[in-house]
Image (cartoon, rainbow, N blue to C red):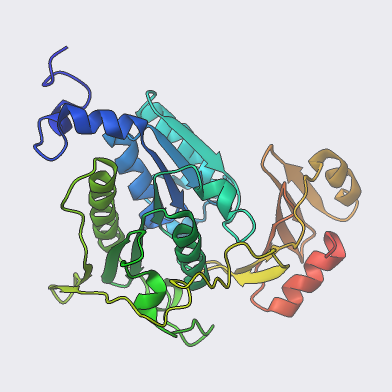
Length: 341
């Protein structure tokens, strides 16, 4: 079969990849953190480009409010509150049957980072959590993995490749001592976000991933920042901080035992409870336990409970989303009553 008529013909005749680069992509392994608007676009592009293995890491379900920007989900997915990673695995498998797509229905934390990231070549950040990015940074520093940061807010975004190496700056070098303070830091839930913004970030990230996987010498070293509404594009050099704790191997998140935590979900009127010890819940037995207290239904991946006052989406590991609750104490109380902390 000629290059021009092959599946990846248009990519193989591109000078930056060629047949040799395509072979490298076929053998490459990538992990994408969160199937957000950015994550779905990145996964779609990399699958079509022929990246041989793609791990989709996400523990959320589809909500109608996300369809404005998350391009691979449908209204039916939202009505049925289907699990994002499962949907994408099915979809990408239909797009490219030559690659392997793995769905990991979980959230990245300090205790599972090794199992999720140690066997891939590149990690792509598509999260909307400041702490998740700090964890990705520490894990990739420890595992000596390159990762591609991408952040979006309203019409603006930033992309940066962080490479392993003693002379390379890390994400902590970039942000310094900045901390995320709930309620004070702008988020997409408070400022909004354009679909075109996340598409731009995904395109920039994918280009850098392809460069990394094909050993190109044109991997971007600076940070690119843009605002599509104000028509501005800028680049900045990120300097290595000689006092950076991460660069000295001092980690605050990576390798740490997970603790029970309550997390507000961006864009959803819900709280997520992550237990300190995850297990394997038997949905059939649990549904029997709850059936006299309200409506219960379950699939292979999630169990839904609704008693008219409380709504819970429970995952196999014990992680749960408490719906229509914005107060942490209330969310933890509901979890303790119905599931147990």
